[in-house]
Every structure is written in C-alpha cells, then in structure tokens.
Length: 318
Length: 256
Image 1 (cartoon, each protein chain N blue to C red):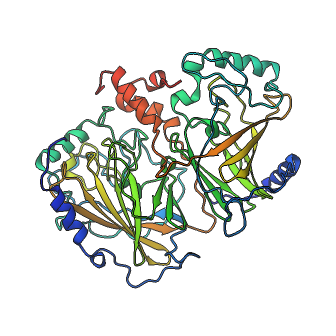
Image 2: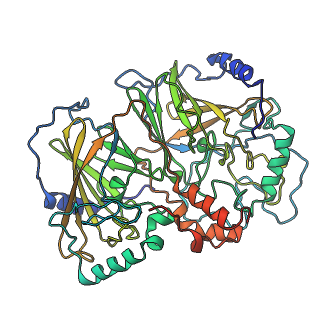
C-alpha cells in the first residue's frame, strides 16, 4: 500500500480535464434557488432503488440453498428486519452503476483482486470484516449507495453544504470555497470535502480518508461468493490515497443524480466512475432518527468474530 | 417513520411554560441571521473540568481539578441514587458508558473536551459534535416530541425566548451518565438547555435537569461556551469505535 506511483499526477490531471458537461446529465431541469442564489438541495431524501454496482460475472454459481445475494441477508447472522420501515420500490435499473470503465467492473490492480478475495474469504475475522458491520464510517461513494436505515438531510448556507446521514449518525460539512484540503497528516473516516457549483451541479472533492473503510458495498453478497464474482462492491478496499470527486445534480424535482469518480493509484489501475439516482426526495414530514450503531452491536461482533466484545469493549480514555 | 404526533403537544407546552423565562436583557450585539436571531453558526467548545465531574473535585492522575458548575454546589440526589453515584464513581474506569464508546447523552456531550459545530436554520438547529460524530437536530418549528421511542441523545425540540435558544430534551434511554465521575440520571430525565449569546465569542449555557426518580428537585448547572477562533479550524474525527476496535485487535492478537 506504500508503493510509489509516478503516474498518479498525470492521471489526476486527465480526470480534472474531463469537461463537466460530459459528467452532469441534468436534462435541463432547473432546480429551485436558495435566497442567496445557489441551487437549492435542502431537504430530506431516501436512498434510491437497489442497483448492482458491477456487471455480474458468471465465474461462480451459488450452491443450492445459499442466500442468493442482492436483497438477501448479508450472512446467516443478519435476517431482514420485519419492523424495518417500508421503502419506495421504483423499478430496478438495468445494468451496473459503474459507467467507466465500460466493463462495469472495478478496475483493480491484479494484486488487489487477490486481496479482495482474501477479504471476502475472511469475513469472520475482525480485521477483514465489513467496516460497516463494525460501525465504522462508510467512505464515499458508499455513504450514498442504498442501504437499509439510511436517509439523508441536506442543509445549506452561504458558503457551505451540510449533509447528514441517518446511518450511524454521520455528517459532513462541505465548505464551498477554494481553500486547500486539510493537512495530509490528518485522516478522517468521511474524508475532507470541498465543494463548488458547476452550473446546477454540486461538485465535491474529497481526500484525507483513513485506509480502513470501504468506498463501496451495498445490498448483500451471496454467501460464499469470492469477491471477484460479486456485483455488490463488497470487499472493495482503498488506501489513504483515495480521492473522490462527486457530482450531485437534480434531474427532476424529486431526484438527485449522483456521479462519483474514484481514484486510488495504490489499488486501482485507473480512475473509475459510477452513476446512480442516489437521493429521492422524502415526504414532507420525514425526519432523521437516531441510529445508534455500535451501542447494540457487541453481540453481532461476538457472533461473527468469536471475540467476547462485550467483555473486552472498555476503551481506555480518562 | 411517519408517526402520528398526538398527545405530546400538551406535555411539551406545559413543560416549556413551567421552566419559563429567565429571558435575559437583550445585550447581545453580535451577528444575526436573516430572520433576526442571534447567529450561533460556528465551532464552539466548553473549557473546564465539568466533563470529569460536575461537582467540586481535586485533581487525580490525568484528571484536572475543578469547581462545581452546579447551582448550590451539589446534585440533589435521592438517597439510593447517591449510593448509585458512589458505586459508579468507584467503578468508573469500567462502567462509564463513554468508555464503551456509547453515545454520551445530553448535556454531557456539550462539555466533553471536543468542539462542536452549530448550523442554524429558521426551523431547526443542527449540533454536530466531533466526539463520535454525534449529531443532534433541534427542531424549532413548534413540533412536539415524538411518540415515546427512547434515544441515547434524547429528542430535542427548541424555541427562542428573545435571544436565548431554549432546547427541551426528553425521551432518554437512561443508559448515559452526566460526567466521567459517575453522576447519572434515569430514563425520566428532562433537560432544558438555555444557550444565550453574550458576545460574538461566548454563550451562557444554563441547563436544568429534572428527574424525580433520581433527584429530590430540579437542579441547574451553568458554564460558558466559547467560540473557537483559529483560522482554518475544522471539526476533525474522534471515532471512538475505531480506537476501541484497534485496542480489541491488539488484545486479541490481531486477526482473531
């Protein structure tokens, strides 16, 4: 993960040179404006419908009786919650979220493909277990991919956008200025974001990530599938070099299209881009509820890893 | 999620009136929002030793001494609750919920030694805390508390009395403490916080706690909250769970 990649600067320059018009597809929809004249994204949103991240491969066939993935439970430890709030179920779009590369697959470097398979084969070990199951943050774009119990609230003021995530009570404050990213020594679970408007599109540039979250992964992988056979994005990992450029564009009064370009020259052979109608406007009386993730998670972690988390979970701060 | 919001209107109204107006003379001349409220937007932090113990305490290893922030000096516990506090205090290194990385509750989150950001809109105020990326959304739109779910951070509804933001919080789960010294409450806790800007750079913070199962009467704590003024300041991360899992991996010898 600490290899030197001389080509990275050139790759970054290429991505930044792609004209915004080729990435934003607002279809000419004119969003409302805030009192100070910015496109108005304020409000509550639900995640969009399930859509596969990657083009499925045919190299692995689920054994008889195993969960078949996608909407199925994550593993034998997780069953669908009968009390979960109902979600709108628009038709599932065909095709994967990944629009570049055209293969619709995460462009791993060869060693990283093996690493992903290793991660998925060792989900019973704390070190490799899905960080979301451990109640660690979801990096981007994962925090905007569909997951149960997540909804969004967006606030704006002159010079900033604040995004609140119901899942695990995350938030990110996005200054809309040209200030540089924070000191590279600082590492943040949700990264350090800067935003700007390109027409009606909010463009957010995020760096300074930790290296122990996943950038994608949603729905549920079929039990026993190697990472390379998945279409859900589970096991895709990143280094501290992760750099994400997101675009939020209203395509109609109720839908924000989300486009994210992911760069990490330590892990991927090229930048890759996904697009998805990630935010669907919620009913007027929607509110975010407290999602206390870790507080009730000890038993789950113990079941999955064999560690007596309840007994060992006292953390030494004064 | 779309819960009918019924009876609690009366309750919330009664509670708010009961605590009524210390409404301070309007001496604040700092910035204001478009709707005329004091603009509390920015990053704030409490200085002091209340996070370790709200009452007067001498220094211990790693803990700064402090004078009481409680009106009258001591918390008016019922006898059994005072005993529970002493037990909590004796076992605080293992029993403090914050040491288990549980959400810290209200008002403790305010005076823990981490900064927090206020984002203010006409109908709600968002408080986002660096500690464990805790968030409170304080509705100031006149809406009532929801049906009796309970929450680690309670349910917060606010209103303005002159220049004072008054936040009424109920629906606690009773599993949080008030400080690292074992001071505690039950799930009947009702907290009224009053944030009064005095200058652009500090707020008077006054908190009244009512919990008939734990205290013999309502009681009040007060302390200033200071604006953080460093240029380029950001909220950073204190992801408690991340550190806890690291410690767990080490004690378990890494992978398992």
